[in-house]
Each structure stands twice: as structure tokens, then as C-alpha cells.
Length: 199
Image (cartoon, rainbow, N blue to C red; front, side):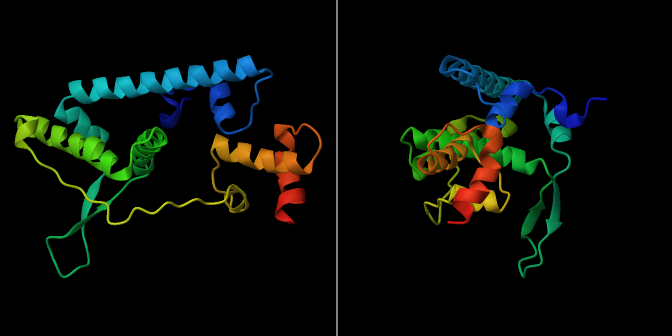
């Protein structure tokens, strides 16, 4: 039986396996083709989300996010609320985080992302909800801190945290500096434990 999470997947199993570092294409051309296909599917999915957002009626959106509930916050201000977020929150955060990382890698700074992307998205959503022009809506978000944090991939690996492809590549490169041979993906865990953790 098909699970809810597997319905509508847009990445093939092999592409997902590649992203998790469990599949290595046999040639450089094959690797390029795999990455190109993944990018195309992601772009297609983002376009479909845009189409859905523009065309979906309120009832459909309300049902999609019905697991979100508001609970009174234990604070002096009784009007304060906190959101009890369902598991789907991490997926929504991942979409925003992916956009943030992608734009930042292309030179956009944090403040520009907040102003150009997040504030505009909120303004447009509010304008659509109230049936007014976007020019009639204002939104102001502010980052209180802008801290660059880099967690060592080895530390993440030791804590069983998920690693990106570039982090796997960094660990592979570190091993390659220590071993004078080609390292296979299925050897990575044992070699990391033997040659990097002990150090």
C-alpha cells in the first residue's frame, strides 16, 4: 500500500539515493546527468507549488494545513500565542531553508533575503487574502542576529545528523588525504571511524 509520504514524490529512488550519498554514478557524465535531472525535477516541483498556491481555494489550503493549532502561551500577556507545529513544519522550513541557502550561495545576503523574499511573500499572501493590492500591505521582519555557523561534518556524522552531499564530499576528501587509493561509498563509515574519529 502506498504511504501518504510516498504519494506524489518527484524524485526517483536512485536520485534520492544519490543525494543521500548511497549511490555513486559510474562516470562524470553520468553524475552530471543525475544532478541535472534532480535540478529539473526540483524546479518543476517549485513551479507546481507556485501554480497550486495561486489557484487553490481557501478551503483546500485550510485542509492542507489543518494540523496547525494555536495554544495559549504561558506568559503574562494573555494575547500571546505559540504555534504547536506538526511534523510537516520541518518540510516547510526545509523549502525556505533551501531557498535561503541557494540565494546566499549566489551572493544574496540575509537582510536582502528577508526583504526581497520573505516580506514580499507575506505581503502578497495578505493582499490575496484580503483582496487588496500588494502595495496596500506592509510587512517588516528583522533578523536580530546574523551569525555564520559551520558545524564540522565529522561532528555531525558522529552525532548521526544528516549530511549534505558536499559534507560527504568533504569527509571523502579528508580520507583521500590519508589513504592513497580510491575510496568507495560503502567503505566510508568504517574508514571515517578508523582514520578520522581516532584522530
